[in-house]
Amino acid sequence: MRIDCKHVWEYISAYIEGEVDADLRAQIDKHLETCEICSAVLDSTRNVVVLYADGRIFELPRGFSQRLHERLDIELAKAVP
Amino acid sequence: MKNVPNFESEAECIRRILAGEKQLFHTLIRPCERPVYFLLMSILRNEAEAEDAAQEAIVKIYRNLHLFRGESQFRTWALSIARNEGLGRLRKTEARREESLDALTEDQAGDFTPAILTSWREVPVQALERKELGALLRQAIEGLPEIYRNVVLLRDIEEMNVRETAAALGIAEGAVKVRLHRARALLQRSLAPRLKEFAPKRGKLFGWGR
Ligand SMILES: [Zn+2]
Image 1 (spheres, rainbow over the protein chains, first blue to last red):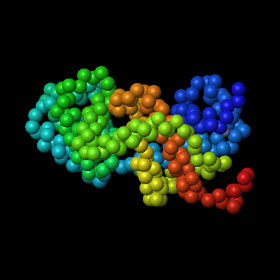
Image 2 (image 1 turned 180 degrees about the vertical axis):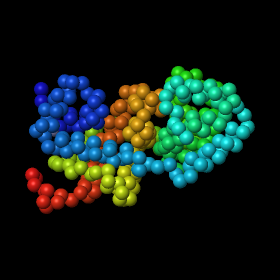
Image 3 (image 1 turned 180 degrees about the horizontal axis):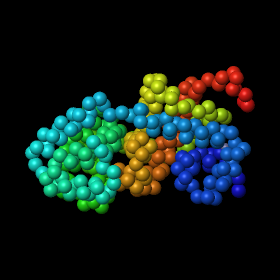
Image 4 (image 1 turned 120 degrees about the horizontal axis):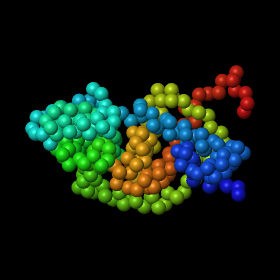
């Protein structure tokens, strides 16, 4: 059975995660060999994830930890949980 | 200060806090700070409110530490307290409208149509030195419906596993997977066309092949 692009798109992220079974993976691999659109969709999805998952994108507000631990010091002084 | 590296020393750490070594709570909570804050940021969508809620949640985690049964990872338990704190605050505001909108989106998002491209030039992480790129990525994630945003933050950004994410959000593992896949498809669609300009220009010397 030959799978079409739409079918591949549905599984791109699962494919990246290694969540698709061997049979489907083989079908997707075969499709990717000849379909430059799906290959580009796969590459761009991977790339997008790497970029937004970079630690520099989401940072705690400046001073967050310090304010938190100061508040905790007050709380800890009160009682044992 | 060191992170609490594994389950055993975590349990040991909690035992000692409950026995009176209260200062160890600073160490115990450190690895949870980021996920607690970003989960609350995702739910409340406001920095000041998220920080306030994070402090409040972490104080509750301390006060309720004797209730932790060790059936899950400490971080999972801590995150579920944080989520309750966030949802409690949401209920007080009129933001519930947004929640029902999000619920609608889940059913409609069966559409995985990506941004169609015929080739992709890798955008290297070095490109993140450009502030516009960071802003673009943040905007895209902030623009996701909440149910997807929560999962992306915990799975991809905080690198929590499926099981832990499911437990922290109070949803099934299957839902975590589906939401992550849909979220990534939505992010590819919104970001891919705009990321192209951040790819290195193909040098004339090395630009053969295409
Ligand atoms: Zn295709």
